[in-house]
Image (cartoon, rainbow, N blue to C red; front, side, top):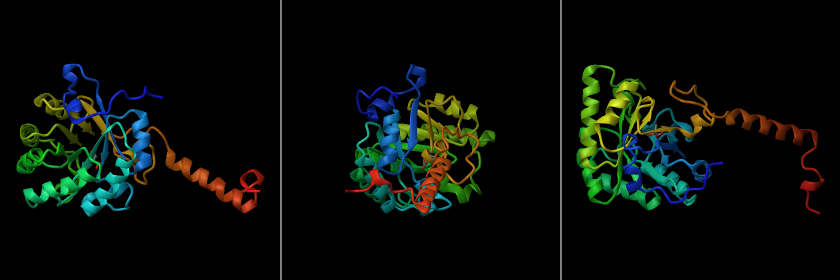
Length: 272
Ligand code: KIV
């Protein structure tokens, strides 16, 4: 088991974790409920992301576009009740930060009141006014560039981004813009490894990669992918550390069998 954490992870302590300055890589994982948050925290992750990927992993949707602010508040509050020492970042869902700045701040405030210490939003230069408004309302913001799942229809599917010279240059410009607007960290998803490393080099805030190669300041994976709890073939960039889905079915099948043959409950499991 990992050493117990000596101090909670905070936005200031995370925002200086650049590997080029000698920092340890940042580890982030999603969690959507209190048990998930407890497991992630006990394992020693730095950041728990209440991702809008709750849509695919828990709520049975095909993409993240169906998730609402109410859904995110509900799951953020559940994670918050686990009181992890890891930093809690909650995703602003689609359309909660696209319409206007006041709406963005109000929606982010709901996530903070539910237990988030920071929010994450997708997009580059176009989001600068929203990021600046959040920062001036004292809400720390994590950016998210590259394969941004809320843009699935614009991208025509979940495809690797930044493959052309122009797209790579645009991504680097977006990274610099969201960093200058006040983001304290940045997720870069689904880009070629060399581009992940280039973005990491281009900004002074930590860059956390998912499918962006080993050259980032940290890595993030989805809880259900790491533990083998999903019902889809995970993308190439996932490393699966357990097959808990298979173990769950096997355990439940043993319970079914025990009840059917009459060996559960036995005397020790019965009140006298
Ligand atoms: O919602 C999510 O799981 C995410 C990660 C893929 C970074 O945003």
